[in-house]
Amino acid sequence: MVETLAAENVTLEQLILLYGLELVDSEEFFREWQDDLPELTSLEKQLLDQIKAGYINLRNYPPLLENTVNTIVLSPLLFIGKFYLPPFHLKLEKSIEIETQDKQTIIKGRIDFLLLNQKFWVTVIESKQVAYSVEAGLDQILAYMLAVPQSQDVVFGMITSGGSFMFIKLLKGHPPRYATSDIFDVRNRGNELYNVLQILKRISQLTFA
Image 1 (spheres, rainbow, N blue to C red):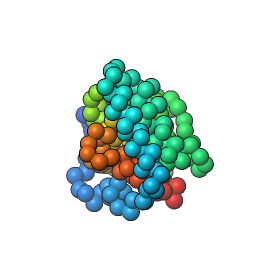
Image 2: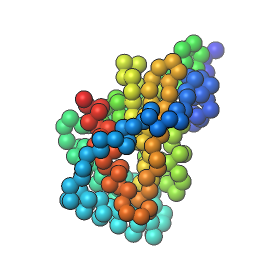
Image 3: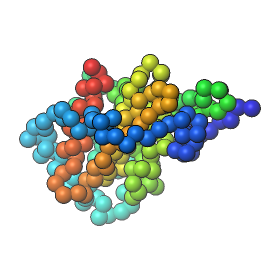
Image 4: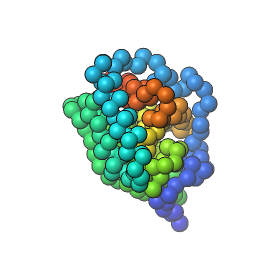
């Protein structure tokens, strides 16, 4: 009998059991978030500083809901990075379905936010989880990344709560392997949105190469 799991409820433990998913603990596996990052212009930095200031200001007046996070952080960030212009595109609420090799288990669900193309996925943690670590969204985004057509050997992802960002690399194969970047937090000293935009630009270069 085939078992069906909801993607929004799937756990990392289930992905490990069903697909043999492995975490890679080597810095060399995921160098894309560290090497050859593009420089930012003075204007880009100035705008990112304004986003940080706006986020911190609004965090002083809770509750900060998911739609607010999208409006004050993620949408401006994508605008500054010119991700609304060709060759990029956005798709909302993308349906996915993946099954194990023995076809005994199927994972179905929808992703709230899909960015760029089949090689780069972005998800925003639900409003009720905004105050928690982006780790809360890791299980779900990995399930969606596993659903990418097998022809895509490498898939990248980003999870954000608005205040924190984490990047993921998935290398599809038998077994599939993944690694994560450091977590970048808007409240840290300096402005780690600089790092986020640089990594977004770098990964976008690779996915359209």
